[in-house]
Image 1 (cartoon, helix red, strand yellow):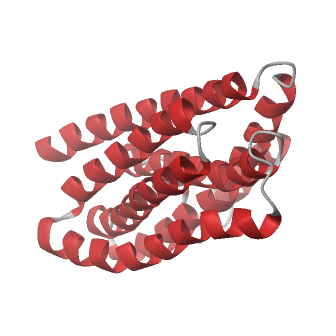
Image 2 (tube, one colour; image 1 turned 45 degrees about the horizontal axis):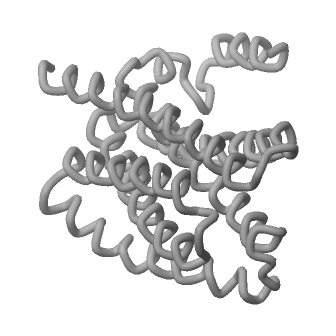
Length: 219
C-alpha cells in the first residue's frame, strides 16, 4: 500500500508517465481492467489447481499423465484464438465478450461440481474454460483500442497486460491459501468451495460488464 501511494504520487509528478493518471480515472477503462484481472486470476488459478488435483490423493496421476490431460486445453485455446479473432472482426467485441464470460463462469461452476469425479471431466471443462479466457482477453484488448484516444492506447494495453501478472500471481496465491485453510476437509468439499468462490468473483465481473455495456450504449 505504501508503494502504491508513492507510485501514484510519482505518476502525478512527472510530465509524461507511462501510465497517465487520467487513464486510471476513466471509469469505462477501469471496468475493463477489472474484468481482465478477474479473467487472468481464474485462468492462472486453474493452471495451479489442476496439477495438484490430478497428482495428489484425488487421482494420483504421474507428472506425464497430468501434462497429457492439461495439454489439449492449451492447444485448443491457441487454435480457437484464431477463430475468435475473426469472429470479433465480424460480430464486434460485445457478443464475444458475453460468450466468453458465459463459458468461463460455466466452466468454473462445472469445476466446482465435477472436478473430483474424473480426470476426463477436468480435460473437457478446461477446454471450455480456455475458450472463455481467450474470448475475453482478445475482446478486451480490442475494446480498449476502440474506446480510448490513440495517444493512450499503448499505455492502456500495457496496463491490461500488467494485470496478467498481478491477477495471475494473486490467483495462484489465493488458490494455495484456500487449499491450506481447508486441508482438514474432504477433497470434494475443498475444490467445490474454491471454485464456488471463483464463480462468485466471476459473477461480479459479469455484473460490471453489464454496467459497462449499458453506459457504452448511452454514450
